[in-house]
Length: 238
Image 1 (cartoon, rainbow, N blue to C red):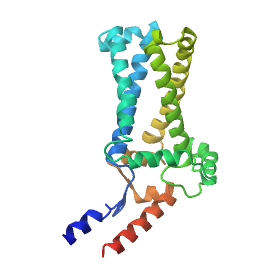
Image 2: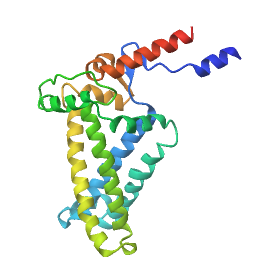
Image 3: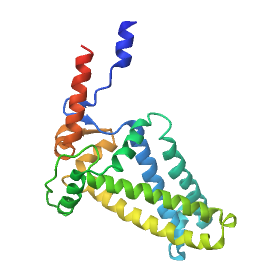
């Protein structure tokens, strides 16, 4: 019984050899459901937005089918990701919210130095937490963009239930929110896939792990905290 209690209370290791677990399975699931549904919404939404894009909707079987897929993707975009705050292992999602709404001096210093790195240089950053200043801004764009897209989308979907003036405002709010989120997504993809300094982070969204070298260079405050917590847990379990 004592052995079972010890195993149950033992915290899983976040640092294993030369790798650090940055994102849990639940975090990765949220990211990919959100990303895939976003681009399905973007593509099908273009056909609804302008007749110029409607010929491309043939890939879905026509504009009517594209509109149906748009609404189904909207449900995944909102409901599935929202559920991850309450099922599985939601503590990481709530911790993410806590982090991105808390800006410290080091976060602003990261934001100021980031343009140099974005265009190929190397910014001089203070030590960063799990989410650096740039990632926090990207997260805030995602959060508020999702809120505005969802609320305006509900008004547009059930237009007969809302005042005409509100419905008219919903369309530009919906389009502008999607435009801002698309611009942020393009930058996000560039950094994750092409940028020589930051593309090492992509493995964190594939298998959960990043190298300790990357963690120390980009998120040293977080890495040192994890190392200290893991060392304390190991001492308790000796």
